[in-house]
Image (cartoon, rainbow, N blue to C red; front, side, top):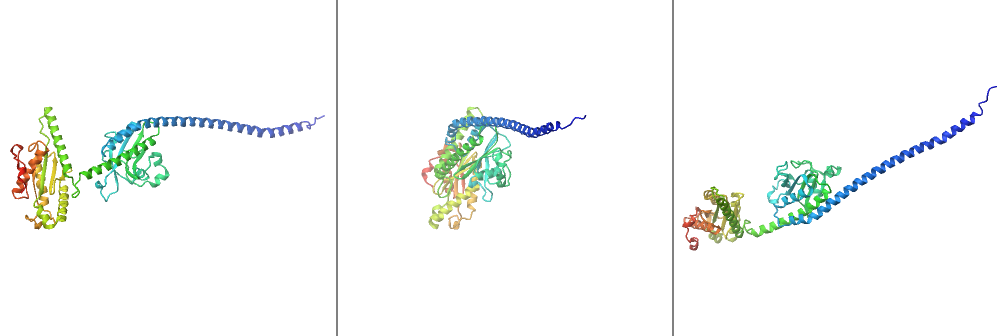
Length: 429
């Protein structure tokens, strides 16, 4: 007799129901375990990230704390009565010590009188590290193009990441980069009262911390110092300029001549002390005045006389070298100091100036006794014609007198110091 399968049906049915109930539970448990593992891993990663962030923050804090401790000394260094030309080099040194960059350059805005009005505003490299690197002192870049122009326009310290952002890319105007540092890591504009005076450009700072914040503080201080130095320089220049002709006044010319004579004397002494047989450094002066200027004033009026002085000063300035110093020494008297120039060279320069003025079509020149505007002058060389500034001027003045007595519109060389007499009291004809 065959057995009936009926007793196994409930067993299989129960097993099926049990499996249907347990499998989803097991799957959920497995998923939960996976989620727990993932959460644990994520938490571990977060802890590691937090630890790294904490380490970085601690490093940034240590760096900024040390930088702020050093900052008063750095600020004193900047505010120690520096001239505009000295400040970029001091800023460069501060950035080197503070951030140890692989490369850094300090650029300053060219002054208005040195900038061609038809050109865009320019920045010029005033200091660069390391010496002899690809970034050369004197290199110029535009103030309103490229990445440097963007930083100058935005007036914010920007990093390489900032410059690569979509917002920056849309605002950067095409333009050549700074030669030798095409992709700087940090650019800090020197901004004072919404005016960009220059920029600091840096690549690969080797000290960890927060170089952006440190460079921002250096740039802010540097901008203030640059502005102050420029103001002082303008005030000093104004005090040393003749108000009418806008050339140097007598006080400045006397100081300048004394300084040149002192340097020449020191150089000569050092060479003699060292047993060198080289010649003494040369220095010459050209002292001249306008012939018959009183007649010009009396005939044409003092306003015309003032305009004559202004035009004459402009012509002479255009005729002299960059290193020469030219100024008004009296009413119609002028002095030109020619460093590194012997008497023969100075005579050639003086004759050139005399010729330029004699041939220039000044207003009312035909009314003058010589039918032209002319000058008479004397040339003297240190130490041949004078052993100090006063002696040099006296020798040149004596030669000027001789030129007047000889008919005017001429330049004469001074006589040697030992042959000079007290002609200064004789009065000028």
